[in-house]
Length: 309
Image 1: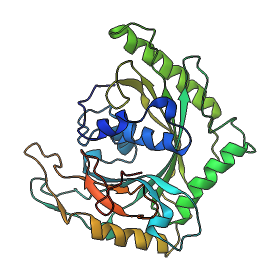
Image 2: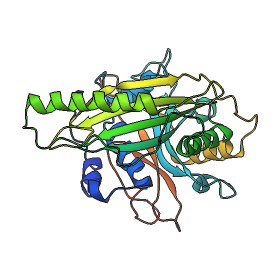
Image 3: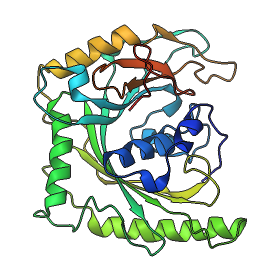
């Protein structure tokens, strides 16, 4: 996987979080930042967010992202716990002059929601955080993960996917240089084989199931130094069959986005978006603010000054 330049703000935010301190739901948040939101302008064909968007036939630089948005921040009356791990909103650029300001109209844009499950593969090739145990329908973890994805389906998103990510620890005993990259690719292959044996899908699933592996290389974060394989569709669901005709949550989310997103997005001289926004949620549960900021900077909540979730 190609190496990419550090991003101001995001790397500082991630550097403050030690791997050994990350567990549970925090692991998903850190992985999303490092793996999928690592570069505001992913020009490399093998960058994770480029590959993920490509599975849906999208151009990832022209997508708005929302990360770790609790349901109750959008709809206080929502009776479901949980959050949106990752939301991708592709902009309509077909036939548009990308050198002119592009209008944002979320009323007519598709929403693609991802439920992300992250597992860490340690140096002994053991999964430290098991989100799935066996590829069987009666496995409790499998059922729990599927129910979380079904929640997103019932909230009115156009497409929903359950995505399993294995982030493999760097083999620090391996010397630096090309050997460390070769070793990372071997680890990624091992992790991918494990995932293929563990992931369970059914023809009745209303959502897609995707697996993705990223093996770390010493002396760098996953969004800068890593090796892996392209995301794999275990089942491709083109539309959400559980999408309700009228969704209160979808309506309130759309209303929130209209208030906080900029009216237009402009492109630089290369035709890449220069002010693509990202939607974040305040970590202060008393504040519960949802705000938009530039993708290449991690800013504090404009209401209370807290860091984002």
